[in-house]
Amino acid sequence: MKIMVCRRRFFPFALTAVIIAVVTCFAYSVNAQALLQTGKEAPGFTLKDLEGNRTTLSQYAQKKAVVLLFWSTWSANSKKALKRFEAFHQKYPDKEIQILGINADNQTISTEDVENIRKTVQETGITFPVLLDRGLEAFHTYGVIAIPSTIVIMEGRIAYELPGLPLVGTEDLFDYLRELAGEKPRSKTEPRYRPRYDAIADASLAKGFAKEKMNAMAYPFFKKAIDKDPKYMLPYVGLARLYEADGNPKAAEATLRKALSIDGGNVVVMSELGCLLTKTGKTQQALDILSSAAKKDSYTPSHYYYAYALGKAGKFTESLAAFDKALSLNPFEVTIYRLRAEIYEDNKMLKEASADYRKALELTLKIDPAIVRGPAPTGPR
Amino acid sequence: MKAGKKFPPSCAVLICLCFLMISPSTVTGGAQQSETGSTRSEFADALTLYREGSTAKAIEKMREVVKNDPRNADAYEEMGYILLRKGDFDDALSAFHSALKINPRMRTARTGAGLALYDKGDLDGAESALTDALTLNPYPSRAHYALGLVYEARKDYRKAIHEYKEGLRTYKPGKK
Image 1: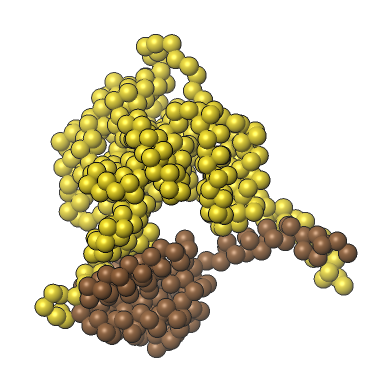
Image 2: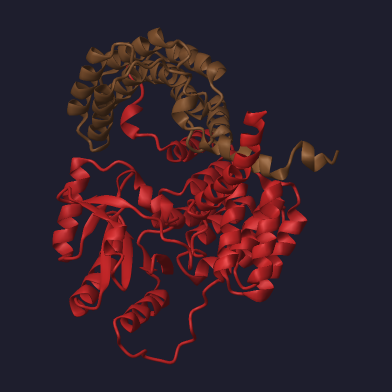
């Protein structure tokens, strides 16, 4: 009996603790929906630099802003980005804006990789800290979709994100950083949109439930987030994905079209809608939307969804070229290999399809390539 | 009685959290452990060395762990994977077998043994070990992956595609 009473008394506290834990867990969970992260809590990290010294994000908490530049030695635009940020760093050394170059060369970084990175740092004359993202943990935690990518953090939250190094987008980013450094804006700019925090919290919770396949619990939170802030695009995308997963593509399409009626040029929503239309056989409509999304900027999903739509429309060569473009922006994206595998399979190219499905699974499972060398061609080694 | 009283929604949250909080190590087949504080710390040191790329030092450290704690199946299994990385397929296979002697239901060690046999070129042996691993495994993505490799090596692409797709379909984040 005593035990029962204790249990009854303890249960509300335990439940509260549990709910807080669930909310916290989901609110800080990995956000794969890149470009819609503004306003979200910036995940912490600890990474080592080239000399082996540990650096944590929290040690720069007092700075006005922290700029994370994800880059690699294999990406042509990374060197340009490094030089551009170095020039900024030299010009505003005392403006409390900390730049961190996070190298994302490979899942596992070999001694040879470290030497290449060191060489690039020397060639480009980088003086801000360069950190090694072994296992690509920061890369995945920040939902990076293209290399290079820039994320600006202020007061512990993501304030700005830019995938790639697009012409116009890059100038906008540096205008923003110059303003942070105290310079007058070059032209009168609209205040940047920031989603409401309570909408972000609801959407994060919904995403957490969706990730654990608890769809019934995810729906109401996505809908609440939309009601609270109809301009916030992430919950529309999440809700549409739920509808699609639950076999209701019509509701998914309606949700994405509603989002586009509010923010017509949103490249994330355009890409999602294009992908959905491709899957539902509306290939021409998909191609129209995706071709303009792909032209907009370096949002990697617009390129691979466009490639997929081209493949499904029977334009195989163009499809492969578009997949190559997507891979040049982000060779670590599982979806690219999955979609290309499907196109290869449609075209009866089973060897290529098999290789792409394998790559998708290797990236998903984070397989160390060194453990799967395979049998020697002439027999057992 | 109202249905809500039988199973309040808050219980669902509690159950879900319990589900979320199950760590991969608690579902790896119940490896028998006899670790002391110092071997646990040495084990952690070995894994850190491995992650930082010091493979030889990691193996040396892991050998110390199993010397001090010969019933540590996890240490044998991790040593197997480190040896695979180094390219010592025979030693890796032997380490996986040691882990399986201690805990025959340790599916990650079975998958490791399959991978070692694959790397050695013994595709039939690998297929057999990995098919076994699949029957034991509620989170079989890695076993599907390794089996896909075997079929790909045999140029049986249709079967390889099937295994890779199953691996992607059954993948659960955080589960080995």
